[in-house]
Image 1 (cartoon, rainbow, N blue to C red):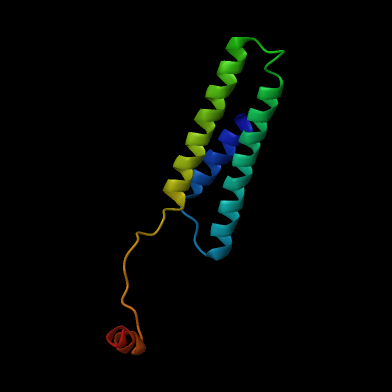
Image 2 (image 1 turned 90 degrees about the vertical axis):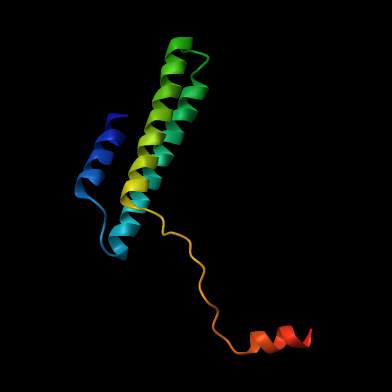
Length: 100
């Protein structure tokens, strides 16, 4: 938990990456954090037989909180491009529709 939170703070502190390599490295780091969170959830689910209801609930809430932090960091550091329509280039499209 603390390692994931510290890594998130480090990446957010650096700001948005510049360059394809930096973006790819950040995506890999965020994916790695997600995998670690999923592993935490799996371990907690397997250990739920041995854990108290409180510990199981706290672990689920912790995983949920960490997922939200990773998602927020991704939205802040790697925003998605807005969708926009673009004009098609090509001369054959008009004649193909006229023939039909």
